[in-house]
Length: 296
Image 1: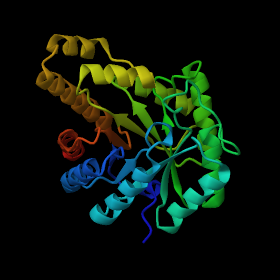
Image 2 (image 1 turned 30 degrees about the vertical axis):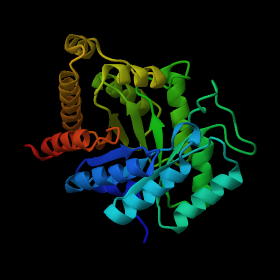
Image 3 (image 1 turned 90 degrees about the vertical axis):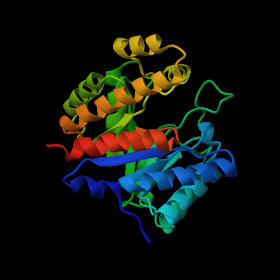
């Protein structure tokens, strides 16, 4: 049975709620993920996405997680697909396989270099850019809804935001249906990003990606990798919390909740949660989302 293209969901009168999972490395962790997915069912996310590991290292587990989330929990799934280490023929096999089993959504990404490499290497007869992958997917199956990544503070490899937005425009023109953003902690960065995107006539929906701070060490590692920054006010609160893990978590959840409330009030078409496979975190933020979308 075919799943629902996400592009069709934006016509609804309510903002979309989605959450991202990453594939666990062990069968035990996969079972835990399925339990977490069950905990989220009460909030009825409009779709869930499933990532690859770094360098495409968990493709088999990604596929297994997608199938289980779909079969056991009936979630609308958006598998991630990257250009890393795959030829056109290999990508076509993957895309056709997803399509034939009913998937109608793909998050198309260039992908990060493997851990042992400092730069992206184009696979033999592969693609160098996400825009090429988007066009390729559309060529094979025009009815697949394609998500692409946007970076409110620019991609870490881009010279500046203007250059990065031109690359984003290329992905949209190639056939992307919507944009999901990288995590950010200052909504002002997103609003500036949207203003500049509008000037380039980027008109597809933009779903902001939200990640709560759960650990100071963890978030500094993540932000250093993706080019996001911590606002001074948030950093001050975190420094005050110090080694108090419970307080850090409270600060992170509260900050993310306030971001979500502001985004909904501003009329954004949805929120995508990077909850790090933590059902306790995801349910708190999903509850905040539902409150924001049902309040007068």
